[in-house]
Amino acid sequence: MKPLRIIDVVKAVGAIDYTSANRFAEITAVVFDSRKATPDSLFVPLQGETDGHDYVQSAINNGAAATLWSREAGEAPEDIAVILVDDTLEALQKLAEAYLNMIQPKVVAITGSNGKTTTKDMTAAVLSSRFRVHKTEGNYNNEIGMPMTILDMPEDTEVLVLEMGMSNFGEISLLSRLAKPDVAIITLIGDSHLEFLGSRRGIAKAKLEILEGLKPEGTLIYPGDEPLIAEELPQGSNFRQLTFGTDETDTVYAFAIVPGKTRTTFHVNLDPNVDLEIPVLGVYNVRNALAALAAAQVLGMTIAEVKEALATFQLTANRTQWLDGVNGSQLLNDAYNASPTSMTAVLRSFAHLPREGKKIAVLGDIRELGERSAEMHAALAAEISPADFDQVYLYGTEMAALYENLKSAFPEGKLYHYVGEKAPLIDKLKAELQQADQVLIKSSFGTDLLAVVAALRV
Image 1 (cartoon, helix red, strand yellow):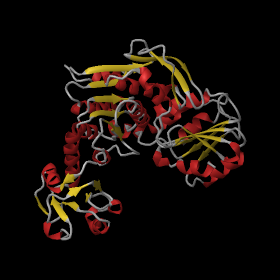
Image 2 (cartoon, one colour):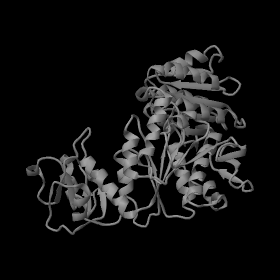
Image 3 (cartoon, one colour):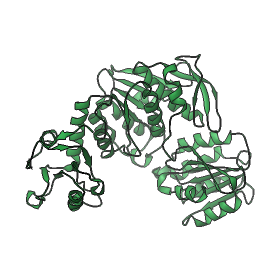
């Protein structure tokens, strides 16, 4: 980050007071984990399951030069600059907003029920063909992670690509008003977080909170085949709107799509003569690429200019990632996140891959579906047939509904259901997997099928 003087931090966060022997000393990093404090860093003690104030001495020992502080002033440490605030999280967010205003990059903000991280990775890759780009890393996409992403931004950043996650109303609103995007992308309105948002219309309303911080001259990019977005757009919206998809009525559309195991090729109407490819399988990932290409167009880039970057972008781990498995098998790891929409999409793509050995699905519970959970798990049976899948392994209590719906279709020894300890599932798979078998592993993160992936990979 660009160095900030302590006095500048004080002004940015609207401090109640501060103590410092040298108010012009510079802060060169911001951390909320005391173990990651470095010399000249600012420690932000956040309150969650534990209270970060209890770890300020650890931050001091690691070289922190200043700390935010919302406890009683008399409890503050004396051997570090203390910046007194009412709320340390709110102060972190104010500091990030001030730093963003100082650097003034173009901001591309991305949200959606599925595909956020992949679209973020694609967008950052294609924009890097011309601009100096900083992007969200890992899952730093919430009210803590996004400010940290902003504060980690190098001072020469020209474009900032931010992923915005949420589970309830109001969360995207906060992030958007902080980031003030020039370009806002909604990847998909799916079924994630139905437990909290009630319906797909509720999800659309929550995702459209991204417009609350959009600059007046900004651009909204969204899927053209999602009527809920168009229906829920604020009346009198005067920002630019671009749609993407596979229909010729979309602003940016793909055609001549040829899916493959590790690469998918396609053409796009913006420059039909350019052959494009992405290093991942699935038509659903082509749609993510279209959103990224639309953002590149808004920032004045050509399709030819971004072709190579799109073909070689690096996908964040655990998203449709091929790995070598035991006994010569091949694992398609997509166990970081799931919704009925994303599970349907990856099942379809996996089913259409050329068959090598056995084709096996290992599916775990999808979380946060609320009262419709059993119904939506059971409905996945429409995508799973013995003609496409040699074996199906289901894990978790919610998957019982799908198991019941598949029992009559699959012969004995081809369909399994596990709950509780994962060791029996892992042992069974290790005994069954053979050379060239293809294994799709997909679930919500909280189901922890990543443990199964770790046990099966070599």
